[in-house]
Image: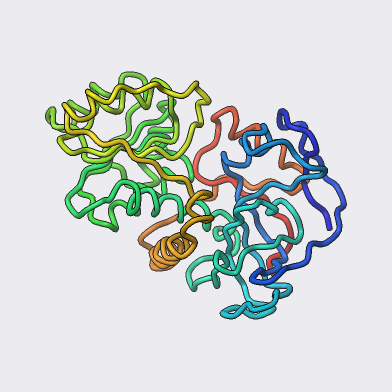
Length: 329
């Protein structure tokens, strides 16, 4: 099979088109003939070595859509030929065939096309999980989403509305992204990130927000505490800015009625796979109903995965980026 793989960590240039043996599904696994693969920041982390050094030719790719090509022992609920979307906790999506755990392989719902579904399983599950699991969203909550124009950010804004949020704000890096996010995902307001605490407090008459979603880190994370309303929750789910970890004092957290919480889908997939599956099915149902829209703005061929990584790594992306791997038919 053709795959975009790397055998050493580094910049986007380490991704190369190679020929590898077709994988085989083991017990509880599904082999997928990949049509589209989502491109995510987690795959940049994989390429940079955040998940460890590669062992030979390594294929990243944490989500994909396609058709079931074979079933491992004990798999039920899907059949060969079914159209599916899948979360791939061990990677493998940047290839013509990928192996997925059956627990994280989902029949493609009506209303979700294969191209959109290629960028759905990780993005929707993460957005739903950080809202419902880590942030404990409740009807009437108000929300601030950092990286508001990205795949998870755009999905989170819409999911928050579906789960009862009354006001949803966002931050982005440029005025152009602010206009895009406001137009595409239904935010009440989107601010350029520099100086955002003052803007958020002004928009909320000084109260702040109940939830902040932060995949950025560094100074953005630290400043986010300033905009939390009483009992507000700062939910962390990434480190896109790649700043050193913060050393946070505890006293300001309890003295100001603040909560710091975290979400990591990889850890949850290992320790609570049923929770990941429940979050994915709930989010996919909302997408199929039209309540949540994934905006695929960029499509690259499998041979151009490095260019897709450059786009994300330089912060030039908006919406969702996918790789077209094979004909979905």
